[in-house]
Amino acid sequence: GENVEQHPSTLSVQEGDSAVIKCTYSDSASNYFPWYKQELGKRPQLIIDIRSNVGEKKDQRIAVTLNKTAKHFSLHITETQPEDSAVYFCAAYSGGGADGLTFGKGTHLIIQP
Amino acid sequence: DTAVSQTPKYLVTQMGNDKSIKCEQNLGHDTMYWYKQDSKKFLKIMFSYNNKELIINETVPNRFSPKSPDKAHLNLHINSLELGDSAVYFCASSRRGAQMNTEAFFGQGTRLTVV
Image 1 (cartoon, one colour):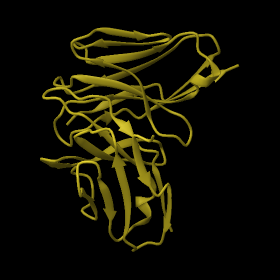
Image 2: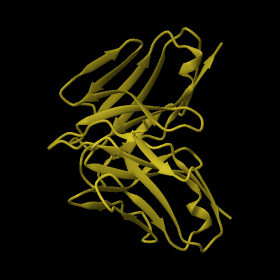
Image 3: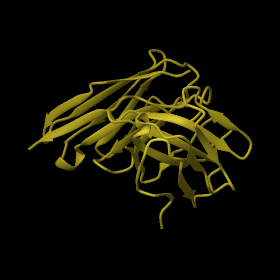
């Protein structure tokens, strides 16, 4: 089945700086890669996603890049703000095995004022 | 108007008991899921279900069983609860295309504590 590795597990950046979170996946059949943000005690919520036929997608301060050959994808947050502090999860969907999304282990992003 | 709702939000119970968590979605999605989030925040798929098939993660004990009375509901039944079952359980739903998935919406979670 699919295996998703996510790094780093914790990331601390100064407010206004950029943050980058990286993920790799194992199943070359995976075709959908969402990123979820989870605030303390809340549900995971989608912030951006990318499909395998696209290399990059941007939504205001958030961007995601996908390298299918290397099987890795990254989340980029620019001009970070205190409300960006949360746990971020990458995920991959291949439709095989247990179906559903396979998640990375999460990155705790801390924005220092 | 909540898209995916699950009840209860908190559940404290003794070892050996049987309990259920209910989930409902009003998005018209065809596929529903249960995920388990452990104390280290790791999210893991337990079940995937639509009106045609149930896919079970092979690591899930058979004490856990999903029950779907209709397309909008997927309840989770847990028998003979163990201490290690303590976690937050999330229900989710999405619309599955022929080859690609779409955004999964999550419920607010149920924090299960087994004592």
